[in-house]
Length: 111
Length: 183
Image 1 (cartoon, rainbow over the protein chains, first blue to last red):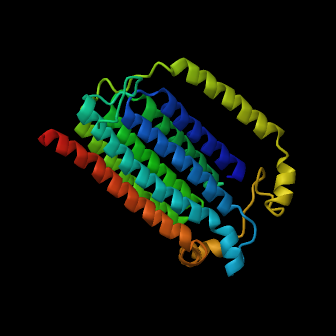
Image 2 (cartoon, one colour):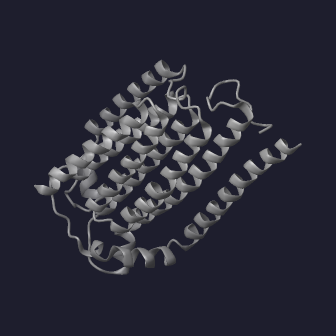
Image 3 (cartoon, each protein chain N blue to C red):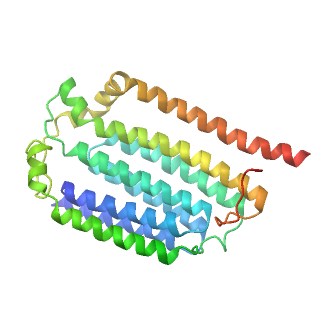
């Protein structure tokens, strides 16, 4: 388990999420793919934090080593906010259009 | 050795459940596979000795976001049609192929040794196996609390503000719809 291995796993998950975001028609599946991309980014942050040099206990060392984990916490908070907002938007579109397909004719100004 | 076996096992599980999210025939199953995939992410965080992040991941994603997505799948009832691909399948496949080629060129041409010497302070963990000093990661939860409430205080408050804004936005979106229905 090296840093390179974890970064490769993170890139693969990110590309799977990007593929789903670009190719799926259903809005719910697009939200799921977005969550995958968020988590791939958080995984690479935590991996850099794990392999950062210098583990001596102290304030200066803590802010250098653990900044990656703090970023992962913020990513999780933003991801939760995004999921709630996106799903309420999906339900609003479904009530307007009776369909959640993302296509060219979608118009949510009235929704 | 054992940790390598566990790492490869979790990686394979993670990648296969992430692929199954996109290629299963039923959206509800996709939501369940999303919960599995988030559990695999949490296992990866435990493996990287970030216990607090793993617990938060299980609480937020497996407990809240997956349930939210499964509930909205049940509300929408468009299950059989909604796993289709859009018209952009072939253009986006080409775009992804090009970007994968570019990323692999980057990985193979990047000077990893120089990066390891300069940025990672000669920590040497980039491509070869090593056991980094656990040091501060033993008490990581304690130090994370101190760090969030001292160095990242403004960002922490802004994250709370964003959560409040998204809550109000979600309520406002659905409230407008109910008004239109009653008219």
